[in-house]
Image 1 (cartoon, protein in one colour):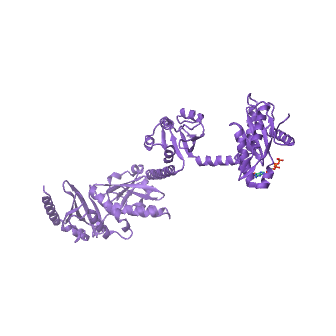
Image 2 (image 1 turned 180 degrees about the horizontal axis):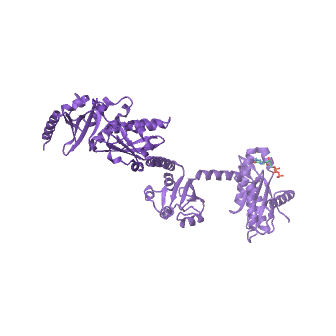
Image 3 (image 1 turned 90 degrees about the horizontal axis):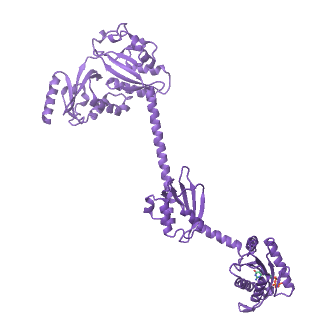
Length: 578
Ligand SMILES: Nc1nc2c(ncn2[C@@H]2O[C@H](COP(=O)(O)OP(=O)(O)OP(=O)(O)O)[C@@H](O)[C@H]2O)c(=O)[nH]1
């Protein structure tokens, strides 16, 4: 059938129904208005002059509700409209409601290929003439339903039961209903509307938070007007009731009130748990973003090695410091492969034998914290620290300590050397001497200490000035260094006093010969700032013996031998104890 023909048929049907005082309004499958008749305006004058073909059903409902809702209910209009649209789509049975002084019964019929046709007919109002003759609901024996001859049976079911007459007033309620809605006498509920019974439940509870009451009242009023689908209302003391209506044949409506408090509580707990899970998930996400950003921007290289030896994570700085290609690391290689790559590029060539061994057998696993310095081929020094991770694997950090190491070695150099000549100072010489004393107990590790004091140095200072004296001290240092062998130790003890640790000598003759060479070298004339200068040197010698005491004592003995040389006319050497 063509759309046009369908529309003509609906119009004809509408005209026909006008004759029966029945209103009609038809909607397509998208809930848009397609046709209506004259009686429709009689029941719903608010639509006259406004309704148009194609108007969505929700626009129709908005007009309907705008006219009938009072100020208290108006804020709920959107909910009413949404519920009305849902009802429109799902309605399966007729229901009646009051509108503009009329009681109207409405039926809705889905028509395949068209949509839905709604028809309304007027009914007599309860307070219309003749209603005064209606039976007195408070009369004993008013109950008309044969179903409730034995109330005891219904008092024993767990759900509340409320039976209403056609006039929507309560005819009978069971015990569980009385408990739910706070009635002590069954007769106190009789004759009330459900709306009034609901108000009673809340009034009986005394003052408290009334927000759920107002909410529940509007849900109840809306649903009682267009009874159909089950609905839920809040009761005092955080209880909830689900109300299910069932229409009886004679206009009686049976309402079951199911206590769903536990269900609601569980729903609430579930929603809370979902919310807190969402919150902690969001927090976790935020934390991991923060962690990632920190990792990417930190000055330290970081790599995480899994329990199975896979390099799972390697930050930007680690790639830079080790000159690792990003593609290699993105493939999550094994540590063994990464070490092989680095080894092939000479990464470990400067590392100590111990570190080389360590790296050769490393799969990343460590039992305890491990730290070592690794000199790189580019001259920088990396401090590599590995800590075990609970549950397997390890975290390895790479810190560029080049500058720190350089500063440390500068400080060490200053602490150990004489600023003028660059020779070791007294403290460092005593350290070397002490090490030699310890070592001398081994065969072939004998040594001699030569204490050198310049002769006639003071007059140089006095005559040519301190600067020339300084130059002369530097020249003396050179003479001593040149006369010494590579593994000997030369030091300036202070002022014009120097010392030499001669290694690998056990007979005094060798030490004496070196002393003579020193005396001879220092005794040569030299030119400093155009001045020809000649000084001399006196040398005291002490030989280390197996029972040698400590470094300080050896130096003292050498010093006293030097004094003997001075006493014997200077420019010569003397051996301690000889
Ligand atoms: N120019 C210079 N002079 C120094 C320095 N340290 C000490 N002196 C001087 O070196 C001199 C050492 O004194 P002496 O040991 O009596 O000098 P000397 O003339 O060699 O006398 P004898 O050892 O008895 O032969 C003093 O005049 C100190 O001031 C220094 O760093 N530079």
